Length: 151
Ligand SMILES: CC(C)(COP(=O)(O)OP(=O)(O)OC[C@H]1O[C@@H](n2cnc3c(N)ncnc32)[C@H](O)[C@@H]1OP(=O)(O)O)[C@@H](O)C(=O)NCCC(=O)NCCS
Image (cartoon, rainbow, N blue to C red; front, side, top):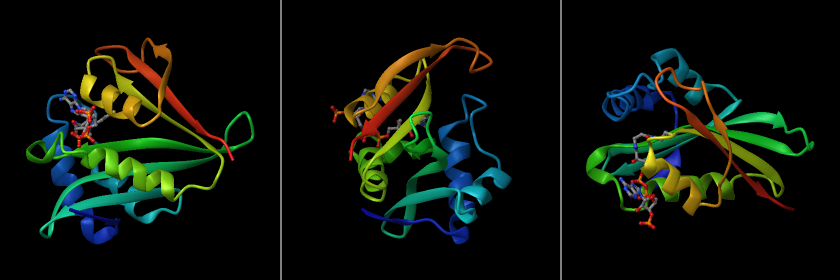
């Protein structure tokens, strides 16, 4: 498995991953959002590739400064196609994001209360549950997670 930065040529693969991974919810990103993830300087996307097949990705948004005036990022999306899950690939993608960040930062994400695999992934990679988000999803509550890396 290799990890590289995403580019516009990955658009069809990411659309396919979204359709597979979020088929049970309405959380999938549409084509315009995915284009932004791959083109806009506001977003960084890393792609996991196995034998020329794109098997997963993570996108992080640069949200500039947090309230504590540190660099702040938001994990906008992470998904791995089912056959390749539970092999540490999402974790490797998160680690790649961390190693490309500046020295001190906040990073946040929101997770559905029923999404235990995602909660386990982020908790294993240093995120802490900060608060409940009562009306964040149309059909269930969410949790707000955050991690901080000190300089
Ligand atoms: C969440 C998701 C990205 C995790 O990808 P992954 O590559 O399987 O994650 P990893 O293999 O790096 O797992 C990280 C940790 O979470 C655990 N984990 C992952 N999936 C799990 C599951 N279904 N049940 C229990 N634990 C799980 C792993 O076991 C691992 O912990 P461990 O090493 O202590 O065992 C993947 O399940 C997915 O794409 N889900 C659908 C899309 C989604 O929900 N995205 C997140 C939106 S917030």
